[in-house]
Length: 154
Image 1 (cartoon, rainbow, N blue to C red):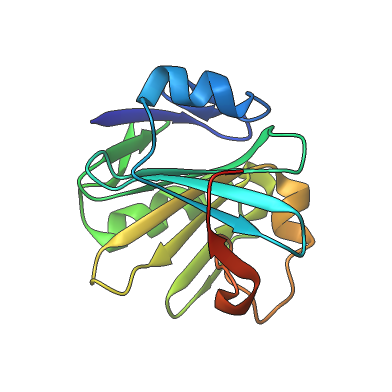
Image 2 (cartoon, rainbow, N blue to C red):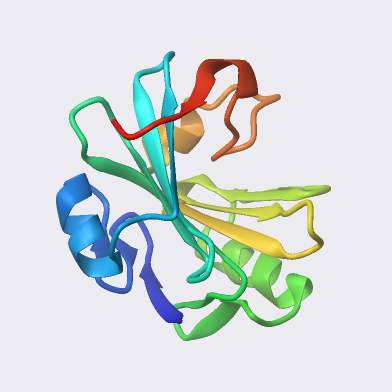
């Protein structure tokens, strides 16, 4: 599926702030759900579509992650489904203060982060700038602490 990403807003028909039920209405029941203890968040996964959604304790979507087989464009520039160099250049163009380090490119002002996935692809995180600004320096947006996660429906 191809997503048009609007920074700080969402991807395709998915919007930040949308309730879990609305996300599931658009994407169907998830293949997997993780529930985190601290902070109280949960995450739905649709790997065949290349998308996951992270929710706060109230069920509001606070982060959308896109990865292969999904493709995504921001401002008409492909950031998933093309080259990693083009994707990083697109994020740097959106945010001159973009932090581009090995394996992670964060455009905080745009609420976007590009992460090198373990499988060799890229993952695009769509969120609000304050979530990226508040992330500890050693944490990657979208990372889950395995000890704090349990595979359960919320």
